[in-house]
Length: 85
Length: 390
Image (cartoon, rainbow over all chains, first blue to last red; front, side):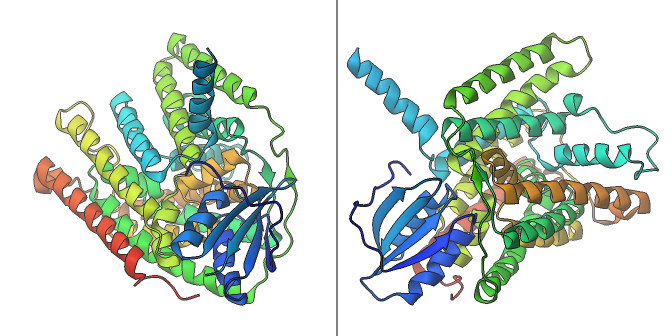
């Protein structure tokens, strides 16, 4: 995994999952479950603190056919954005 | 000069600030494992942390049967390897600005506590964790390694079922704080590297018998820990993802890594450079199987195996600090009582594959099994046949 794709500043999520404090595999597992709750075309935002998520979440999202929008760095955590296929 | 300076920055970033691919990590780790055997002995994790726990229990008088104290942690191979590993992982995390004390929700800490105990028990049955009982064991041509492999897959499959159940029925809860995030300057990591090199020189210049060996354990262990954290190499991921998301990247990297290490160590043993029975332990077959199963369940709930837990400790993940602590304490206690009761000698036999298949046959067998695993998880990545429904 090389460069981490940055999400655009004006991205508007439809639903947020707070996975902060969780470590492998819980952030990805909960993301996989949470994306079931939104409609196709909507954007899921995941908050996380595990550095591994920066690779795990985009890796899974693209493999599962969703659109990987990107990540944003916040104070002590990351925001990950996925558009459901 | 500007372009050369940019090149340095680019390479620094690629080496220290991006996550290496699993395959890169796996290949480098394999070579480092071969270097460690060539130095003196195979890479392993449990012996060191057990040594530290042994000291605790011995000091408080719990291990009354022991007439002698445990080996000194600074002059004991297993302990120095773990010190090096932890330091290397920490250095990698600090330079990569990934170190922070991350406190998870209480549920995770509780999971860490119990899964650590399971890992300690599993490692007692299998004479090692995923490294000493499986990865290094198999590279050292020990039949018990292949049996633990089967146990681990089964344990992981069950452990993951529990996580799916938990996700449906138990809420995560609020996280604890994240402390020192990006507060430690990368320069501290480089200073730590310097300190490790100085320590290595101190060992080689020491008059104490056997101290010079510690230098290699410290530095090679350090390199291994660094590469593990830098590539986030994770055997739990390798076993678990085929059931969870179908992703086979890490599993394939573990397979290739294991094959490469097997080739190197087989050469060393074949040429008589190191004793054949290194890392061949008396747990073939049921100790390795049960141990693999229990350890597999534990490591999935823990979110880290032997190495995975320790490099995450180096990264500051508090859940894994709980895991590693309970892993060490429980393994120490189980091992003590297994030994006192004689149970330790009932777990199976030490089977060195070349005694039955020759060196060529052993290497071929291990390679075929690893390639089969590689192909199955690769196929599963397309077909999702083994992936659990959410």
